[in-house]
Amino acid sequence: MNRHFHDADNQMRKLEETKRLKSSEDKQVSSEVFDDRTLKVLYKLAKQGYINTLNGVISTGKEANVFYGYDDDELPVAVKIYRVMTLDFKKIKKYIAGDPRFKTHGNKTRQIINTWTQKEFKNLGRLYNLGLKVPQPYTSNENVLIMQYLDYSDDDHTAAPPLNKIKLENPSVVFDEIIDFIDVCYNEADLVHGDLSRYNILYSHNHPYIIDLSQATLTSNPSSRMLLERDVKNICYDASRYKIKLDFDEIMNRILKR
Ligand SMILES: Nc1ncnc2c1ncn2[C@@H]1O[C@H](COP(=O)(O)OP(=O)(O)O)[C@@H](O)[C@H]1O
Ligand SMILES: [Mg+2]
Image (cartoon, rainbow, N blue to C red; front, side):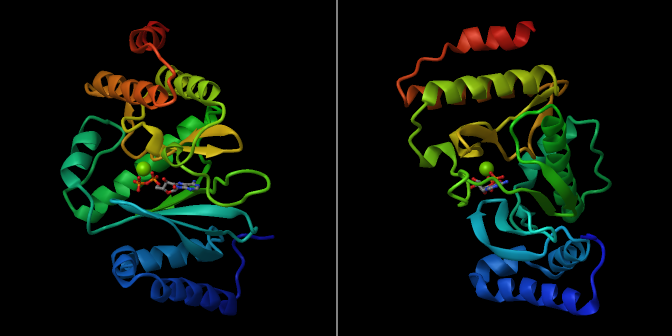
């Protein structure tokens, strides 16, 4: 099917669906997420075939809301929409400042959020292209990021749960995979996640998938070593909840000596 072909009726229907979503959601959430500009972006993405329907909310976070829906090829997608009103800008500026790939022009809030969204899109692509388990990024436009929807399993298409919400049956295998992820991410993608913990790892098809990469920084960033240590510490802590003892120093040595 041609992604880019839509008749006028189709376009109207999509916009109506987007509007319906707006009115059916909790008022406060919808007015924060779907300001006029964001609606326009969603409309544009619908026209391009990236979103055909938006079906509901997966998560309403501090900085972004995540919805699920389908694209024109009936492929399930996750749509992450950064909220324009409530972002913690001090934190963001700190992360963007050390990254030469992203120059913000001026200080306009929207531009900073758009850059933040673009950064997550790029980071996901970089990791996905290395074969790491992250949702495949499809596109980003302004404050909206569209990516692969991660479901739980072949028979259960509900959203993959974060590790904090489930009890793993094979925790040592999962934590080994997470440590491998940190290692490859650092040594091959030159990235440090920077906010890694059980909250940003989804369990999908029996494997851990790493998400929420907007704050990930290049290893050339002066804070990257500290952020790497913090990520590894968090994972050691998460493993300890399963009575698995991960050796922090050993893991750091392994990652840094490569
Ligand atoms: N690609 C995805 N597939 C399925 N669920 C997702 C996906 N991305 C995010 N989510 C859900 O949305 C939640 C918030 O996403 P995240 O990227 O961590 O944003 P936040 O900045 O709000 O923490 C996740 O915990 C997960 O439940
Ligand atoms: Mg998160």
